[in-house]
Length: 269
Length: 269
Image (tube, rainbow over all chains, first blue to last red; front, side):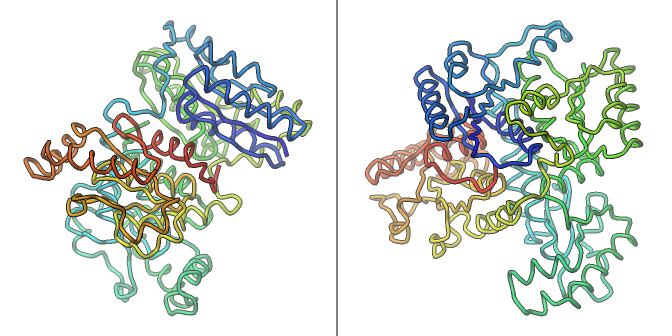
C-alpha cells in the first residue's frame, strides 16, 4: 500500500485536509501518517528518515503533502525519497501579484490561537454543553441557534461542531415521547422562534440507530419512530421552522447546510 | 476590503481550509464568504451573481477558492469577475501520473459520510460527553485516552475535538481542590495509567480564565492557581504521565500534540 505523509511545522491540519481531498479522488487505499510540529532541522531530519523508511518498506516513493515556507526545513523534507506536493508554493506568487502585497510566511500558523476567536470558541463549547439536550431551557436568550428534533437525529454532535469549529453558541432541545400528542412548540421556545432550526431523519434510519442503543424497546419501534418523525415534521411546517433531513449527511454537511440556510455569522473562519 | 469566496459542491470545508491557509500569509483583512452545496448550474449562476455583485461593491475582483471537478459548474464559476484559485486541478494530473490510476472526481465528497468513520465519531462524541469532567469514573476501560488536569486547563474542548474530528474516545478527569493535599493518583485511574495524558497551564493564565468565571474567588486566586499547577506537575513527573502546557496552544494544537506524543490511532483521517 502506498504511504502518504502529511507534514507541517504546526498541526498539519491544512496538509491533512488538502492531501485527503486529493487522495479521495483515487479509488485506492493509502497508509496515512501525520508528522506535526516539524519546527527544527533536527525534526525535519527525523521526518525525512521516517519517509525514507516507508519508501524502503513499501517499495514505492511515499506521497508527501506539506506546507513549509521555511527554506531550511523545506529543503530537508524536499530531499527525501518521497514525491513532494507543496500546496502553498503554487499559489503564493500569483496571490502576491494579485494583492500587490508580499506574503509574510512567519505568520503562517493557521490553526494556532489568533485574534479573539479562541475565547469565542471555548465560550461557545461551554454554552453548548450547558444547554445540550434540553438540560437548561432558561438560557436560550444567549443562543445563536437552537436545534430541535427527535432523540438521535444528530442535534448534539452538530451543536458541538458549530461551537468548536465556528464559535457559534448552539443549544439543542429534544422533542420526547411525552410531547408528541398534539405536538406544539413549548412556551419557553416561543420567544426564540427565529433561532430554531429543525432536524429530521428517515424513520427507518432512526429505528436502526435507536435499536443499537436500546434493542427491542418502544423507543426503537417502527411505529414510535414513524410517529415521532411525522409529528415533528408537521410542527416544523406549521410553525415555519426551517428544517433538514440528516439521514445521509455527515456532521460537517449538516453544519454547512445550517450555516447556509440561516446565514448565521461564523465567529471564526 | 477584498472579498474572498470559498465555494464547492459539498461543505466547502476544503476550500475554506486551503484558502484561509493562503490568506493568513498576507498581513491584510479580507471579507469572507462561503457558498456551499453548489450542485447545479442554477446554483452556480447564483454564486456567480453573488461574486459579481461583490466585485462591483468592493471595486476589486474577489478571490475565489474552489475545488470543482464537474466541468459544467466549474465553467460557470470560472467565468465570474473574480480571480480563480482551484486547488485540486494543479495536483490531480501529477498524482494520476504518479499513481498510474485515473482520478474519479464523482467520488469527491471529502466531508460526507463514508466508510465507517461516521458511527465511530458519533459513538466517540457520546462517550466523551458521558465521561466528561469526572462525571463517570467507572467507564475508563473503554477510553482511548483519559485527559487529566486542573479545572480550566483545556480538557473538555480537547476531548470533544478528539472525538468529533478523529473518532477517539477521550474521557477527562479534573483534579480538584480537595484532591490537592499530597496529590496522588485516584485508585480508579491507576488501572488505566497508560491511557493518561496530563494538561497543565501557566498559573497566571489560569487565574485570568478562572477570574472571568468567578471573580475574586479562592478558586481564581493566585495562590490557589499556583498551588494546583505545582501539585499536578509534580504528580505527572512522579507518575511518569506525559503532559503538555496548553497556555499558548489552540484546541487543534493541543490535539495534534497529544496525537503525536501518544501515537493514538485516528479512526478517521
